[in-house]
Structure formats: structure tokens, C-alpha cells
Image 1 (tube, rainbow, N blue to C red):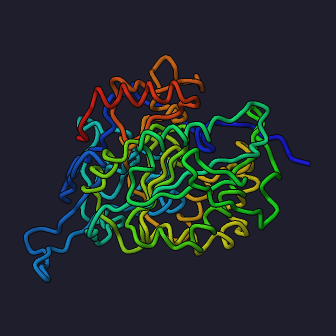
Image 2: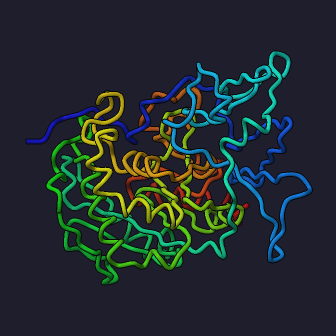
Length: 398
């Protein structure tokens, strides 16, 4: 029998901390001290080049990027973060308060603190940057036939609409469709049917929706993707929820300004939470995705992850696939890169209007906000309205 647990639109939504007033544009800026830390593009990528003596090989300059490890390797908001150089809350930055001392803050007040980011502190989160040869993407979506929820699902209708329009994942270089059922699109394209291997598809439900916790089925989707090996021909792997309005050209533009690191990286899209890898649009480098695939079994058995209980001793219920994937990648040295402008997501409380932060039914403003994804729009008519609005407002990626 399934265990009933608390439901949140994303498994990490409930960890939200107090935040400042909503901003229309999510760009993360660093105040440079003795280290030259620069923002390069709206994607929220930080690059750092060590002075004019940076080595040059094969006509390419070596450079370093700020790429922190998972949150358990970073400092909390009350501790001295100088020796870690990073913070365990998304959207916080480690600033020097006085020599040898630093604190994680949303923003630093130079009238109160030095607000520098010295070389010795920044060195803790620097990694050698890699310029990828292209921004090719393997994008996929999952449609569950047996959701467990009493309310009907419109996900297949949404995927049919996107296929007919030639948008969403169907604009990616290659796309994949996966389901627990033997289904196909109206155009005849079949979904790859996956089968339960670990007996955990239906071990628990979400209290508010009645839907099965989705980590079990996603484990088998990831395994199917690994067998197919199509993803290996592309630099980025992207999972888009069927109810997300996904604008591929905008993501591709963002990725032109994105560096990679040797251990792989994923993009964090929700600020002021402990875990900000929200599932409406998951963007993972090929190296990072390979690490996830190689460690599915290890991470599911890892007592420190304990996905069936969840974080904070089960306070928010079992981990959904997005939180599990982040915890697994973090445990295996994949680096996280901030990109709060990636999506406009109603599940991310920080993205909601100031007077709507507790409204779980909130939907983003497609006619004025910018992003590569807008979520959630669970019926075809509202999905199409959002798509038309955002394309009218921003016909070209910026």
C-alpha cells in the first residue's frame, strides 16, 4: 500500500527562505574584490581569468570559472564561508566581511562590510573552464499513463499539440518520448515504453494530488535513455515537462554563453531554496548526465541521500526525480551553475508575484516575463495562450 506524503509542486519548493522583493530579471552579480570575478551573459555564468599571464595553448586562452560543488560542501548562512567560498542556499553569495572572515548573503552592504571576494576565497570554487564545440541538445519528455491521481492528465494532449506546432522538445536537435504505457502521438510517433525494474513506481503518493512519487519511473526512463545512447551525440540533455512552455531558441542562445567543466554541470533555476534544480526544465551537460546514469543504482541505495524518506528526515516527503537527480549529481562531484533566468516557474516561490508567494496555483506572466520555460500550463488552451503571448513579447531570443 502506498504511503501518503505531503505534496509540493516541486520537491524542493517548501524549503524557501525569506527573500527580497520580486525582480523581473534574474541575473546574479558578484562584487569583485582582489579577484576579478565577472558576469558573462544573462545565463548567470561566471568566468575568472587569472590576470594577463594566463596561459595560452593552441590559440585558446586557459580560463577558470566559478563552479561550486553541491550544497553539503558549502557553508550555511550563519557560518564563516571563507574556506568554502560558496553557500548552501541557492542565490546567496559568499562575501568577505573582514580579512579572513566571510558570510553568505543575498547582497552585500559595502557600508557595513568589505564585500570583497579575495583570491584565497574564490580559489575554493574555481574550476578550469571548457568551451563546448556546439549547443546541440537531446530533449525528452515523459508522459505517465498511470499517474495515480484522481484528476485526468492532459499531458498526452499537450505533447500532441506541441508536435503539431513543431515546438517544444520537437525543435531540439533530437528528442525522446517516454511513457509507462504503450502510447503514440497522433502523428504515429510512438513513445518508448519503460518498465518497472526496482518495484518503486507506486510506493508513495503525493497528498494534495494523489500522484505517484515519480523518481521510480524516471529511474527507468534514464536507463532507457542510456541504452539508446542517442544523448551521447549531444552536448546538453534537457528534460521538459509536458505542461512547460519550452522555447528552444532561447535556451540555445543561453547555452552559447555557457562554459563547461571537466566533471560536468547542471543549471540551477530557482533561488532562495536549499536545492534549486526544479524539474519543469532540467538542463544537464552530457558529462553530468553520464554521471547520473552511471550512478542511478548507487544513489538509490545511498543512505546519505535516502530518497524514499527525503531531506530533513522526510519533512517534505520522498524525493521527486528533480531533487534525486541533483542529490545524486552533487554526491558525485558534478558542479552547479546558477541560471535563475532560465525559467519562469510557478513552483518556484521566488518567481511568483510578491503578493502571491503562497499561491501554489500561480502562473507566470507570459506576456511580460522572459525565460526559456514557463510553467505550469496544464491544458492545451492555456498552454497555447502562453506560447503566443511570450512569442509576441519576445519574438527573438535575447
